Image (cartoon, rainbow over all chains, first blue to last red; front, side, top):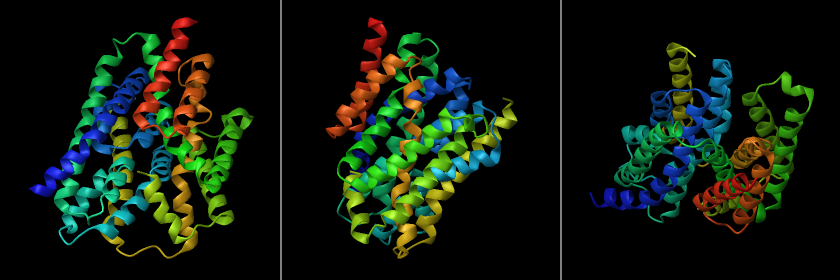
Length: 240
Length: 102
């Protein structure tokens, strides 16, 4: 059980951070028109911040199921990279069923902590690491969804910027240290602004706008600034 | 939105998100050698977060002034490499202060 407890302790700061963001998610979902239990179910089953925020936008705009699937695929594609990276460090205790479970709990923060730990990754460590953030994500959403309806409007609207603040806290430090990332961000944001502020807006939904801008910018990055293997290693350090 | 429609959305979301995370962990056990694919995957998180943040952040608080000040605050603290939680809470507080003043 030692590895489980070690993982559990490593998960505490992640869980604390998740309460604030999942509270915002619950609040945003209910403000937008979902019920309390719908918001909570989404967090319980998906455990992904950006994907869930985009997901409720698509739901509330009555978007198509294929649009939903594509949006989740593109927004969450980064998890595939993290899972591949984690599988490199997994020890022999990570059998088939353990991998099926651990795959459910790969988030940016859990990935960052797991790869930041210099030892190889065991099944028990990952179980311990994932369980508390998962619970705090779910119950934070429930709290936000319940309190969201009694929270003053001025406070509720101010909370709307929280998730974007978090996104900036991920991309700005990375861009600061890497001109290639600045280039990719400029392309992504330019396309996003173009799709929003021109008549194209009426022809393309928000979900597809994200997909289009993100895929185009990543392709641009891959073509113009291909990375070497060392950069992949650096990314692990940056994401801590 | 009907309940059945919600459940289909939820299943699509949960299934796609789960498969993206679990399949590589279960199936791929060697390092990706293809430089183009590795590069593409490397840039995806930044590109996604960039286009999800702009221009949405300007409309996230229901008025442009508080959003602008919140955005500036986020930039400032993110540039100083403050934690995700710190940056998020500062942005909310900055937006709130502007809303209370105006």
